[in-house]
Length: 154
Image (cartoon, rainbow, N blue to C red; front, side, top):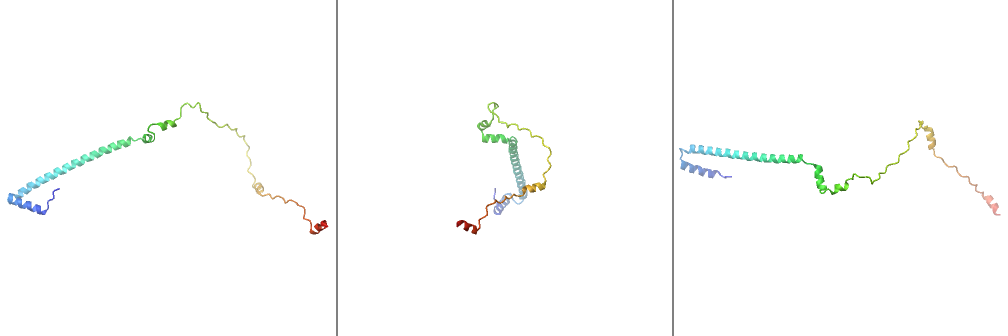
């Protein structure tokens, strides 16, 4: 704001001492101090009022934001963003009259007859069922001996 350094302050004191005089200088400084104190109090009060107005304005903005958040409806917002003219919704709606459509229903299945309790199978019989069966070798005619083959040739 004001940039008053020590040299400027010394010049002001010397001028005040010459103009006012040494006898009235303390009383003049006291009066100047009162005026400076009042000016600072007014500045502080003004700054406090401005800060209070800013806080109230911010609170009003926050209240508006809270009210908007309370009234926010996600379903409506999504509908407006995805399908603003309602054409997509109309395409997927099912009409009330379904008389033209035949509904395929599964044929009823006959009830299962009641069966008597069957005892659990015998583990030994199960093992016997699990043994692999090897086919019997086929019988072929024995190969003729070499001497017999020679007799047939002669």
